[in-house]
Image (cartoon, rainbow, N blue to C red; front, side):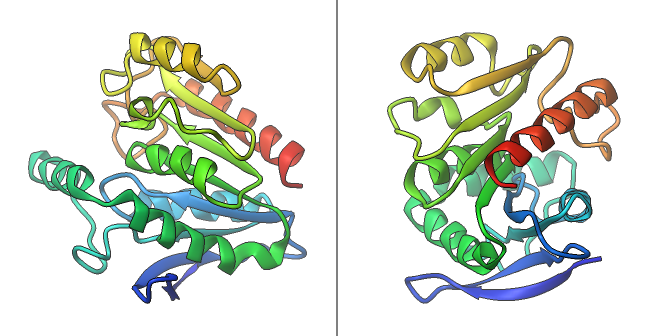
Length: 223
């Protein structure tokens, strides 16, 4: 449904991105922040779904500064590599890459960002540092490390109460420091509950409810 294109960040770095154009007039733009596994089939499917809902959707390849077109498998080696890259990434550069994606879909009007895991952290930082109209963070792995950032737009979060990467005590501490951010908690859901390609983590009920809430939020904040 979509296509891979090239973007150029403000510092001259070139990166890939997966872009999906909706049928008819777009409601707005949506940037999708990848998991630490890259812009793989799962993430492309997320982009396709939100484009079908009417949003000009783009997913930048946020590890291109390390290794162009990288996708990590859902196994121990892939997790290890994803965590290594997530730990050394410079988020000042990540924000430049996200800004290039925002600029690409700004033609559609207002722009939101949505991200998963690593991309959830990126969503929070971009919502605080970029020109965005809304942010939706799914279980941002390191989001709670940045409670003193100030969002420039409304932000909602989705997280399961069994998430070990974003445990309830970290969520509570973040909420105390940043009460304007709304967290949706999903009983019995694990980290990565939205990813239907990972059966051991996938929670269909939580996914459906989170997507319903996300679409309603997008309609309210973007169009």
